[in-house]
Image 1 (cartoon, rainbow, N blue to C red):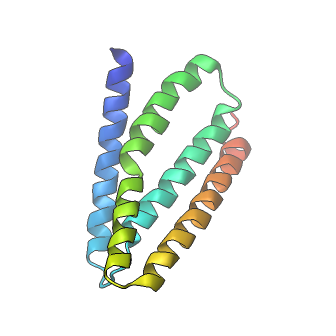
Image 2: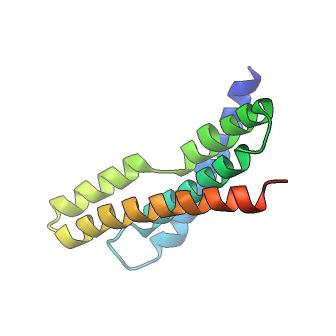
Length: 127
């Protein structure tokens, strides 16, 4: 039961963070899905940082923290389904350049953010 509560709280906080980012970017006059892109990049950075940090911690601490950070928070915060839907909507509205850029930027930036996060976690959180 404790694990369910940990995931629930982490997911709730991640969803609230995602909602806040969505609202912040909703005021931008653009068809490009900057809110979703930003949330996904930040989720990758957080997940990578957690991964880097976890390499130096005990298995019990990592297991509980993973439920909160990776499964809960990042699960509620990242938005692959939104990314997919927004990209398809761009294609359907003949916004081929924006849709293609969204795919390319999302993949490259999310991989880069995950790698950066892993490096940050290993370098600065190895306490």
